[in-house]
Image (tube, rainbow, N blue to C red; front, side, top):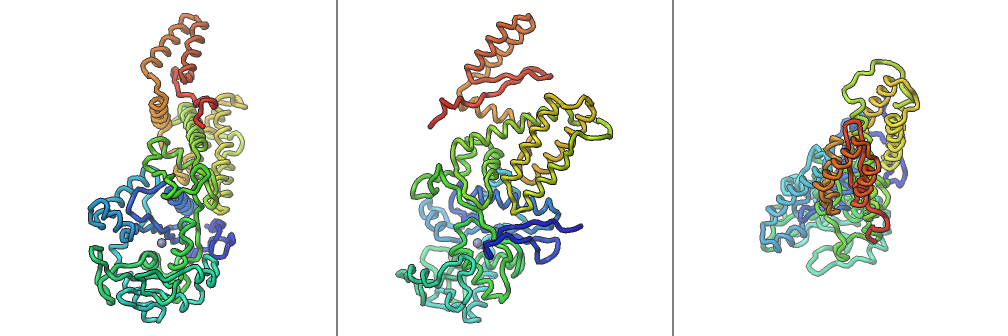
Length: 494
Ligand SMILES: [Zn+2]
C-alpha cells in the first residue's frame, strides 16, 4: 500500500513538511505529559485531546504508532503541594496520576502505549547524565549537575531565540551552583525532606528536562519521529531536551516537533495568578465530554482557542443536532437489508474529503466542516428524500452512517448511543433550567388526548404552553419525544 501523503508543520524547520517516518510504516510519538500535582485544566486537556486525535488518525491511515506520554511525578510543584496536604510527594503524585487517567478517560482519550513515570526511570536518567558529564557537556558542582549550554553550539535551534538576549535576561539565582546563567540543572542535590535517589554525585533528584530525554530514548530510541507538547514548552523545556539528547547521543533527536496552541479564557490568558483557571473535571460537570472535544477540535490545533461560554454552548447544541440526526438515521435503517444497488450521490467522497483535510497538518476544523455537509445530506434523505427509490435511500443512509462511524473513531466523537446521549443531555438541561419532568409528561399526555379527540386547537395550546416552559416536542413515528429548547438569546447571561 502506498503511504498516505500526510504533511505536518514542524516547529524545528518552521515549515509544513511531508511525514516521512524513520522506519517505513511506523511512527514513534512522544508527548510531554502532565506534572501530577493537581487537577489538569482545560488548556492541558486541549493539548492532550489534539495529540489523541493525531495518534488516532495516524493509526487510521495504517501506521503502526508507538505513543508515549509521560507522567512527571518528581518535581518542585509536587513537593510543594505535598507539604500543603501533608502527604508524601510520591503518594500525592500517584493519587494525581489516577485522577488524570480518570479525567482523560472521561474526555474519551485513549491510553498511550506507554505512560512512563520519572520515579521509575532513575537508572536511565542517571545513565544519560553520566554520558553528558563524560563528554564534557555537563559538569558537577556541589552535588548538582548542570548542562553547559556553551558546549553545545546548536543550542536554541528549536526556539530560535537569540543567545545573547537570553544571556542578558538570565541571572544565576542564589543557591544555584552553575557557571553560566543559561546552564540548566540535570541533577539537583538533595534538600532535607525531599525525595532523593543515590547518584555518582551524591543523593539528589533529576531536573525537569532530563526525564523526557531519558524516557523517550528508552521507549522510542535515541532518534524518533514526532515530539509534541503545548506551545509554552518550546522554551526552555523542549530546547533543553533537544540539547541534552543530541549532545549525549550524537544523533538527531525528534525529526518533527509539533506544538499545540494556547487556550485563552474569555479572551484573557488562562493563568493561576489571574484566577481564571478552569479544571477539566469542573468543566465536565457543565458540558458534555464530546461537546467539549468538539469545541477543542473546532479550531486548528496550532491556533489559539478562546474558552468562551457561548462557543461551548454552541458546541453542545451542534452535538445535539448530530445525535438527533444519528438517532433518526438509526431508527430508519439500522439492521435493515436494502439489497445491493446504486447509491444517491457519492457517499465515499465525504471520507476522501475527510482524509484530504486531515492529511493537511491534521486540520480538525476542516474535518468538522466536512461533517456538516454529511449530516445535512442524512437529514435530507430522511425528511424529504430527493429520490423515490426507498431501497436506494436506505442503502445511501447506511453508507453515510458507516462513514460517520469511521470518522468518529478518529475524532472521538459520536462514540455514544444516540438515544443515550440525548437523554443524558436532556437530563442535564432539565436540571440546569429547573424543568419539572412530571409536569412535561402530563402535558404531553394531555396533548395526545386532545389530538386523538381531534381537538387541534387544544393540542396547539398545550404545545405553546410547553414551549413557554422551554420544552420543544417532536412527533416521530415511534411517538412524541421532547427536548429542552436552547435558551432564548435575550435571556442568555452576558
Ligand atoms: Zn518533556
